[in-house]
Image 1 (cartoon, rainbow, N blue to C red):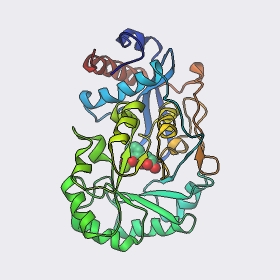
Image 2: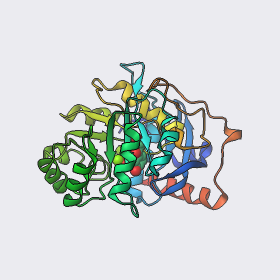
Image 3: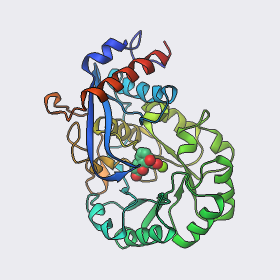
Length: 321
Ligand SMILES: O=C(O)CCC(=O)C1=CC=C[C@@H](O)[C@@H]1C(=O)O
Ligand SMILES: [Mg+2]
């Protein structure tokens, strides 16, 4: 990987401007109510290192590479001025759906979380029905939580969808669901959490590829992957702060073909961000750099900051070069 300089930044280069922040969320998403990330500044702007805490160092080092690319190389050249985004609906009760959708004015597509532990298929159906009252084009995301049989039953009950994202955990199961239902299947974890992100495509297990900039190692890596993937792609967030979203929007704006709404509107899930949040306007996000007010950052406590600094050091040591 090249950083646009002879040698990548050292650990102390990164540590010098690194800030660990704790961003409170409006509602539980991915099982959390506070999102911690680290941001740092390089010659090209701000970069984010926000690998989910449960990820090991090898996996997390790809997220660090993405942050370094943003801070030391900056974004690739855009080919479009705006990126359509979907409304993201957490696994909330149906009666809270309207309030969440209001934060995505002009969105023509909604992504609804389903298969949440402790909930039933009836909860999922009710949530999707409530969303359809506002937005007709709906996709769901089960985060791999259904068995093949549960996926087939659930997709029949939920009815017509744009696609079902990661209905089951494995590539083989995705292929089975894809053969058994008419619902298009999107792969997310089967791309971002595996050694070979192209295997799910080669296996004929997906109709749509979900690509996330941070876990895949950066904007340019996502563009390379998209060029190799013969099915439509969607670029989505990794629950990033405004710094990471800026990289996601830049990658989506640089994609030669983009026919589907991207999952980059998650800034609205936070009550506080590291910079002016990316708020969709008419269902669109515009690529732009972010201006971080360092003095106003919602810093994490000393123990969490130490945890992130140590992780930065370990992950930095795993980067090539
Ligand atoms: O795609 C979207 O609308 C928003 C992003 C999103 O859903 C996710 C972000 C980060 C972690 C994930 O659990 C989740 C996803 O699975 O796609
Ligand atoms: Mg997903």
